[in-house]
Structure formats: C-alpha cells, structure tokens
Image (cartoon, rainbow, N blue to C red):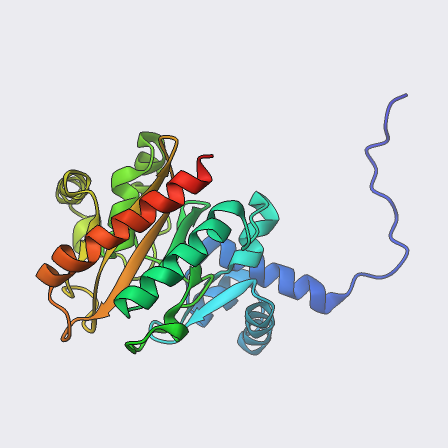
Length: 263
C-alpha cells in the first residue's frame, strides 16, 4: 500500500515559545560559536527574545556561553541528538578515573576532549577538583580551537587524514582560531607534522596569556578516540617542565585508557 505523503494534522496548536527555542538552536548550529547580535539576525527574532532562548538552551545544556569572547556555542546535549553521544560514553567513562588520578598526581586540571561534528568539545574536566587553581571559563560542552590549543593540535596530528582535511577547510571556524594560521595553511600543516613527530601538542602561552599546557592523543586499536590534556598557569610552570615531568605521565595515562578501551 502506498503511504500518504501528507503530514498528520496536529491535535494541538504548536507551542510558539518552543518553536523559537528551536529556531535559535538552529541558528546557533549554523553560525556558532557566535555572539548575540549574529544569532538574533540569523534567527530573525528580536534580540531580547533570542537572549531568553539562548539562556534557556544554556540552562538545559544545549548551548554554552564563553564570557571572555561573549559567544554562544552548541552544547553536548544538542550534539547528542545527532550522534547519540552520551557524557558517560565508554571512552569518557574509562578515561575519567585515569585523568582524575593524573590530576591528583600533578595537581593541575585536565580535560577529556572529543570531536563532535568536527568541533573540539570538552566532554569532562576536573578543573574544580585541581590542587592548583587556574582561572578558566571552559567546562563540559565548551569548544576549543584547533589551531592554537595543545589539544586541538594533537587532534589534528593524530586524527584520520579524511577528518583532518575536512576540519582544515574551516568553513565555520571557532572565533579563537588564529587568523594568521588560517591564512597560512602551509604553516599550519608544518605545526601538525611537528606535533605528530613529537607525539603530543603544546601550548606555551603564546595565544592564551595565562595558560600553558599539553595535549596527548588516546589511540584505541589504531583510531583516535579522545585527547587528554593538562592546563597549567604560564607563570608557574615552564614548557620544559611540562615536557620533562608532565607529558610522560600523561602518555602513560593515555596508554592505560587505550588498553582498557581496546579490550
């Protein structure tokens, strides 16, 4: 029997507020990370209405707000709708206790970072539990730039060729991406190659004034599943100390995560 192509007539009238939330979420997915002005223009809604909808999305975990750049981004709950991702997904659940042990050992906070829809996303962090304090405004669901973060460089160095080429198109770049590197793909690829040879990503404070750190890939059965990082205060820890004292322990942690996940 041929199915009818007509839509079922609604029993109730659509909830206008819900429709507006979805319109703002769609706009955020199209142009985000973005500020309020760009989003209200994209959604074609009044600025005050757009702000209320954004705050609603943030409170439910479907969007995140970066107070430094004053931009909104799609959150993990929204990403889960299309990819079936769950914050307690296997690799995150396996990595979390290992990363917490790393934080207890080193004192500095660490993140578990994944890539969803070609966006680098913090899946979990232990910033609040870290012994050494550092001012950060990025929590679970926050996005990281690829070009200037240690974790982003590690991801680009160890992800598949197809994913790397797709990401490097930078059709909708994170607002913190380096414009100089975006305009110089040869330099960007040299950084990626250097990171791959080294085995981990580095961020020595040249882009984030107060932060320095490293990012290490977690390779499971030949595939990049996540990255773990360490974030330190630039004026407290040298890059040499990060490489000499911290990176080897991070690599052992990554190997432990991969060994468990690969069973």
